[in-house]
Length: 302
Figure 1 (cartoon, rainbow, N blue to C red):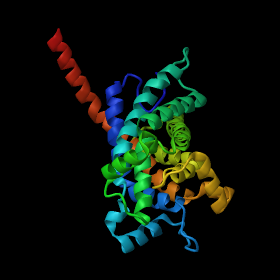
Figure 2 (figure 1 turned 120 degrees about the vertical axis):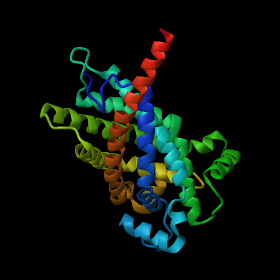
Figure 3 (figure 1 turned 90 degrees about the vertical axis):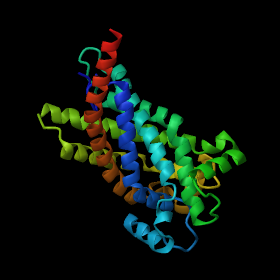
């Protein structure tokens, strides 16, 4: 058996749908913390202190601008999360079979990470970069100009002003983040599951949530600089990856690359648990339905 989030016989369509469902649930429930983290990473006004506590940021935005402002860009993130995690789980589950040891059929920790990295690059190219660009632009725009009325309106404006390259602003930073984040998140989760299986630890909702949370912590600490660069690149006006790096160094120095770490940790611990718990639950529900419909279809053909 190939080690991983699920059995290697899980159909591709089940991985895709279950991953999309899990991504949508995780994106919506954890969005306020993502909003707070993004606000902190964008360039702050001179002389205005930036809170480190994500709950304080959320509270201030709610009090000053209302709950609608706090969910600005949520639609883009949820759509992106559905596509991103559908693609990530689909390709991770498929790629890990190619990376499996031919003799034992299992993945070493390094191969787990490589499978996750490959899935992350594919997800960034197909779904993450444009949706993250829209989400970040909406959050940044809400602070000042307020040009964008919605995610669709922001997409149209950016397309008209900059073309498709405008939607892929920050591609390098996003891809570096996604490749490393997926490698650490999916890889760590699978490594933990493999270890637990050798110790005969029962896999249940609590264990899945705990594994996902641990994976979230490791992912955040290892990939935070890429997340900061991505956010700066994808502001409302947009900038190149090199310019984003320069702006971070100019504003905060090297420590600026870990700006928003506390807030992102708050989100990834929570979201990592939700993501993998939702995924495992969705697979259990969808797999029997898919198998039943496929058997029925095969019987009709026969």
